[in-house]
Image (cartoon, rainbow, N blue to C red):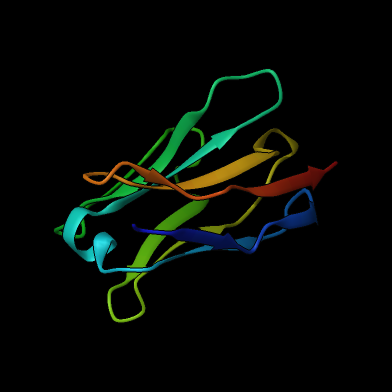
Amino acid sequence: QVQLVESGGGLVQAGGSLRLSCAASGSIFSFYGGSWYRQAPGKERELVAAITRGGNTNYRDFVKGRFTISRDNAKNTLALQMNSLKPEDTAVYYCYAPGVGYWGQGTQVTVSS
């Protein structure tokens, strides 16, 4: 069974940066691509960014120009570099492996104003 373990969340002031990482127990990100989602209190989980098997990236408008998704095939990791963070970015962030349908446990990101 594939396991996804996230790290890198925390508390940061508005305008700051955080880097999230998701480590997989197998080569799923290189084979299937990967995604990052987030869920704020009282809201539905929403897609933030995705990277395809071929390396193409897609971003929601609300993070374009601020967030960057990447992967390291050799380390079986998926990353999300988050810059210019805003209070509205506060949420639990989850990595997701399409194809196998596995979710990470989530990591809290809190941006203070």
